[in-house]
Image (tube, rainbow, N blue to C red; front, top):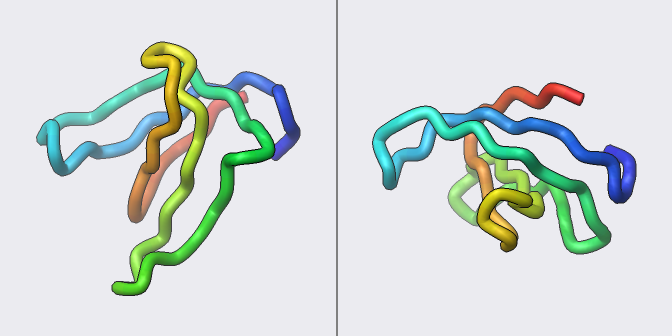
Length: 63
């Protein structure tokens, strides 16, 4: 990912029980990582909610 380049992320939210689509931005605080339980995670900046969010397991990105 390229810093400060906007993108759209779509993923299933287990807590909301629905598919979420957000306008996002990649910053220095964003990252891909694996949880202690082995889940794939991606932390991104949510432009719509003005804060950081984490997508888990699977997601799609449109540039």
